[in-house]
Image 1 (spheres, rainbow, N blue to C red):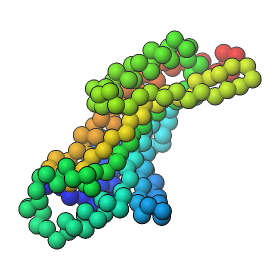
Image 2 (image 1 turned 90 degrees about the vertical axis):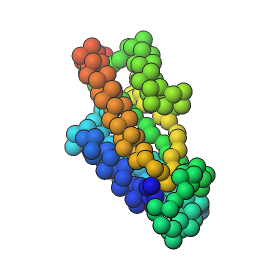
Image 3 (image 1 turned 90 degrees about the horizontal axis):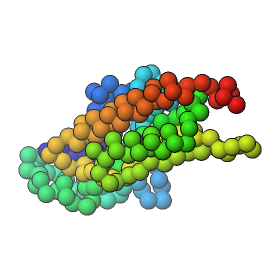
Length: 198
């Protein structure tokens, strides 16, 4: 049985992403009004984030900490597996996977096809949860697509018989690999810098 505190959960996610060959960096915050903590983990291929990157975030709330403190005196081998279903053991998670079009003047019909392709790939992991969001920049002449990203909100328990963070890291790798594949394809089709197309 795995029972993770805030720091252990953060480190488990970072280590799982590293095992998938992904680089990551961590940004943490404290919300004084709610006595909760937030953690954002940026992940990407290579040493620096490029056009494709992702982010996994979780919030550790007061109820999580209170339950953890109740469990501290128990023998780890004696944990009831049903504890993983306790609402206070639930940690809210969100994930986002970004595909940026810095130098790609993508056609509108291609954008729709790419959005559908991303959603289909994500459905294998998240079902009907989540969706694709488009970021558009407006100029005096036109509107340009800057980014497509898939976003999903979910949850997981910090009391678990299985290391679900390993599975999540595998999902993250698959999503980023898919976006990288799409980016390479689009760059070969629409790869002229935007300025050259104007």
